[in-house]
Length: 84
Image 1 (cartoon, rainbow, N blue to C red):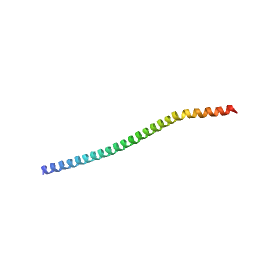
Image 2 (image 1 turned 45 degrees about the vertical axis):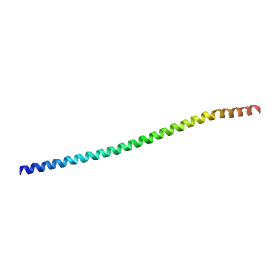
Image 3 (image 1 turned 30 degrees about the vertical axis):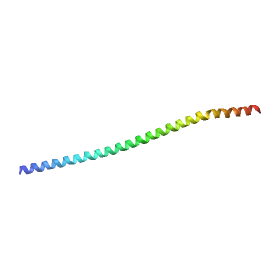
Image 4 (image 1 turned 180 degrees about the horizontal axis):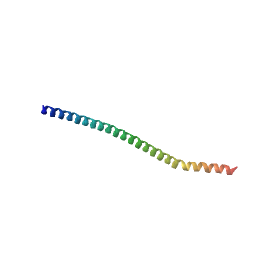
């Protein structure tokens, strides 16, 4: 009788341990999904940063290329004003 009670108690304890293990495994799965979301967000932020840097560099290149043309245009406009 006592052995039977001990065995039943051990089974209940094992069942609770299994429930805890399942709970921990579920928590690990949730953490894994959270890490995937974080990695995805970091990827999006990095792509956006690269895009902004490329746009800024393109803008700087265009300003450097158009700068002399703007100056020439302004000089031509000034010469027209002074000729009148």
